[in-house]
Image 1 (cartoon, rainbow, N blue to C red):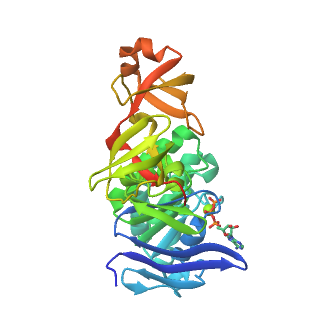
Image 2: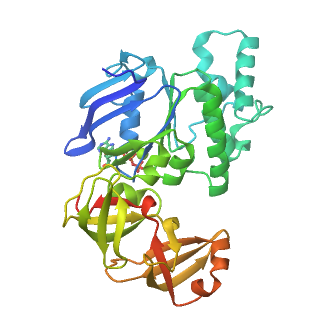
Length: 361
Ligand SMILES: Nc1ncnc2c1ncn2[C@@H]1O[C@H](COP(=O)(O)OP(=O)(O)OP(=O)(O)O)[C@@H](O)[C@H]1O
Ligand SMILES: [Mg+2]
């Protein structure tokens, strides 16, 4: 038993020989902004359409607000969906588009208008009710689609890459708006994206998917700071993977020998290691320090790029399959003017920030 608002239990979906969703278990809390994140073809849309009742799982059970909805058709579920394409009726005004879902509710004209106006205000389109869809921008169209989906007050709103057709800047401002709207209405949002930055920005919780499976499900900060394996580490944000071998381990620290950095102690972080284990020390670009201490190692700078707020270095060293990406805040770089402008620079890993992952699997 689970007290989750939405509970996907051992969900599987196959299309002939293709396993689109492979035994997924997920709990989603009421009123949360939950994202499904993963590369193209990993099963995000398939999972979302099963939640919305547009498709049926091959096996498994879907519970929604205490009710088994696995066999309940879409039109009888308390869910509504917003798609990537706007799916707006071109021949109806903006107001009629937004109010379309109310047609079965037999409201009088004043009540109908009141509900439509409130929704237009929510999505910052006050006064746009009489416009035609052809007179709207992409961002405005998507807001009409959102208002139309929300006006029927679903318990769950399912959104399949709703912002991916928008250019970067508009998309970023729509992300902030979408999150604000979700907080205001308090409806549970299940949001599909293949954009990790978007998922990190918006979500209370993220499920990372790959090949039909959920690899990790947790809040954004945990996903970024404590990826569970190499695949998640490489998919979410930029990650350096430094090969090493476990030399020894206590209950608190593990000593790892890395060809490029020598021997270094790291917190164990609840994992267990044996001497001789082949591991990867996963380090975000911002988690290196320019250092001259005994832990520091001199690596070769093969490339540098200026990004305003910080400098990016590509650095090579012994035993590294690919160059490391090292990010240094501009203010720090200025203070180390000589080092950052040389061919070689001494850096060290900040031990508390590194995650030790198994090399295999
Ligand atoms: N109706 C279908 N018939 C056969 N195979 C399908 C069908 N729908 C989806 N698939 C397959 O199931 C897998 C998952 O597809 P899905 O659309 O869920 O991926 P996705 O994560 O949403 O990808 P994208 O980011 O490209 O939208 C893919 O291999 C896809 O080809
Ligand atoms: Mg999809």
